[in-house]
Length: 126
Image 1 (tube, one colour):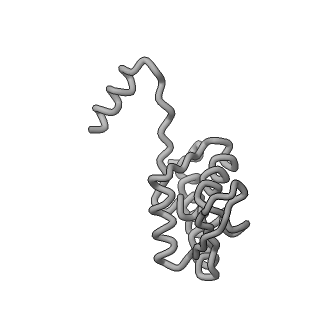
Image 2 (tube, rainbow, N blue to C red):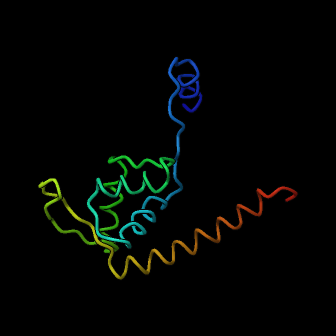
């Protein structure tokens, strides 16, 4: 299947955007970090991630809302209905104390993993 996708991309006259798959848990970690700053609704979360990453990361609704549901189920975030600045009814998400603690743990794990990867990829590493 991967070969099929590669062939389709190469035979297409229009260049497709580079795929930017995230490792498992990355989206959740970015959501929690964003909500640590302030409560936001889904669309604002997507825009913040896109803007903060200088358009390197794009979170689609198809992955954002399932991630938010998982975080709600784990009680890492809570949600309430409110009215947006455009006078629309939106569900606003807020980080819980449990979510803040989880975020701290996950960022620490990520930093250790990144350090290991950086060491392996460093010039002269063997």
